[in-house]
Length: 438
Image 1 (cartoon, rainbow, N blue to C red):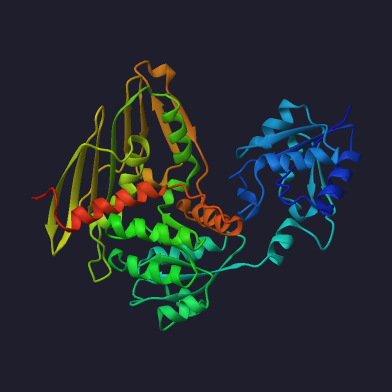
Image 2: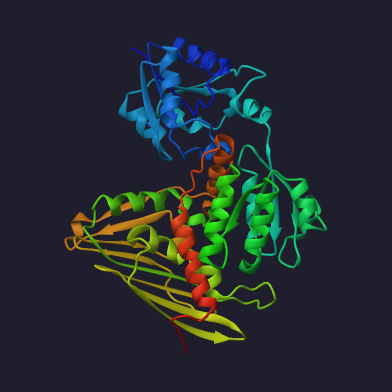
């Protein structure tokens, strides 16, 4: 029996897919079809698959052409599958000509002629793209522009910035620089806000009142009440309002949350998060350490322990009217948490989650998480977890934002309650409530 294997995303299954599967089937007696898992599509350049893994598997199954369907989950799996299933022929469309020649060492490689004039990407491109306007002065804006190129269904409509010092000249040359926020709103379907936190409330509210969807770098605003008001306004108008913290959308971070909540390390006793950098530039666009790093460091604390802490204490080191270092300690009913953030001091930027059975260690920089370890008293039981991370997680949150707009369902990885409590902490910090200076 001649076994044939092929792989694909099979998003929005169409005639071209079916023709390719038919020709793959004709090469042998038994056809194995590998369907790429959600979040795994590194070699295909673009992400933002419209259908879930199960929907895509069911679509392939419905063709009746696959004798067996497997899921492709990691880089290098093709070699493992060829050996595991004793495959004779690997086949794929000729648009990948030469890409998989290395598999000739394990089986015969056949490139099949692709059906002209039709592809999932072409189908998606015919749908209306979301025009995303960018407002802000942060260098993060450059990353948003770069990562948007990898996401189907989003195009940058332009930029509005009070100061362009940190925006790359290439981006200023390539995208329209609007002279007012109103102009940006008039030419955009959605807005990504990367401005200083003190402007967030007014900018978000204005966008929502103009019926624009919004993604905003945390915090949403500098008070809990304002944040709750904005989420209520978005809901009332049927609009999407996302809190942007890139870590929340990484595969590794979400897998870590599942393991913790499943009891992998027992009951969580402590969460300790550190985010630091040696900020070399101090100007009007430089954020304080807590405003820049605080929301990220608070993310695992609030998502793993909740927001109902009993008490907190804040200690900050201030220079030039900015905190260069801030430490916050939380006390919960049966657990504790701490965060350290800095723009001007350096420490190991790791994340440690302590449990009654073991602990999870995420090495620096943990906010760009692609790897973590579950560690136990008996070291032979330790487990390591690796996950691909592209674009620091930014492209994944853009994908989630685009899908939420398309489906009219808010599928944010950060619930409103967490966003509101982050804003509450920001407000306490700004007003120096429970803050001691060193």
